[in-house]
Length: 417
Image 1 (cartoon, rainbow, N blue to C red):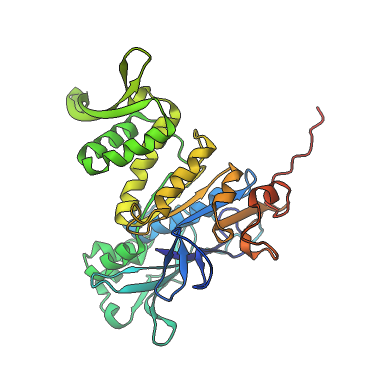
Image 2 (cartoon, rainbow, N blue to C red):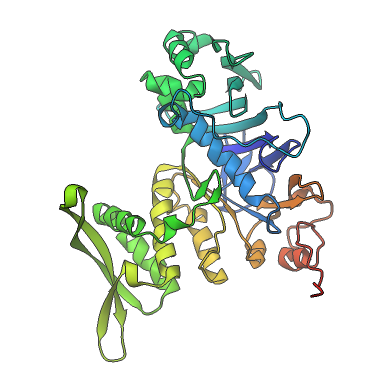
């Protein structure tokens, strides 16, 4: 579970910004929060709101990039490939690296809660610094367990280990050949269990955000719909959840069946697969439509469920840009309820999303609302609603936001043509 993360000099964020998912133990909450190892609570659903081009997607990109670099960079980047990170470009001095920090915690194999802090400084050419720390509850401090520094691109990364991470010669050797990789991703490649444990504690991420923004094709391509159908065929235990969820959106759907089909494979050969067929109630008789023939909204709901279930059942975080795309605003609370229901969200998975349907503000606590705005110099800033003095939990957040009371609203001056 992610407690908080910080970023600076990344995309449109120049100065340091912190996104904190935690609240104090005494703050009044509900099942949309989960208790942490120190008694604080972490939000399971957090929404980002603001004007177009304010930096909302960039905030999600930061978390998606961290997950990618920490655990996938060794296998996904070739030795000479640039690191896919975008530093803030609106300043004269472009030599400063992007900086990130993230605090996360989860259960070990023994069932104990463990808490980590990871720090990263890098640009597209090299990693300046990487630090991994583990929390010591006795001293109430973080202790270093891995440190990696590199002064210049020609230098070999210097890796230091502490305590159980003292034997890092194999990781050091891998980084010498792959300096554009994270020490954690390189550590995974050694097969050592301690790296696998930390990756497991960090959790999975499912997202529709890529380096260039929201991935639009993912939600309507035939390949995605095929993968979705195949997933629910292989996991029949989740089919009732999908049926109930879809029937909320489309009252005409009575049921569905997953049927075998043949699809083109390699070398002009066909292969076996499966496709969802929905049963609709007509005035005279029932009829079927396969998932590719359904409305864009129904397809998106199916694919959202496909994305969410692995997170809800296995733990992690779903990072979704423009949650409202192709959906009626009344369906967004239904999506939130998946994460706020402890019987469904057994692993306390988190949802971090952007949304332009601002009426959803009234379905969130003030500690779950993150507002983003950009100044005249194209520098973004983010702040949590409860940071604004005088905001009460019983306020009408939707009305106050629309009135401009909280900021982070577009400039809607009338254009004269």
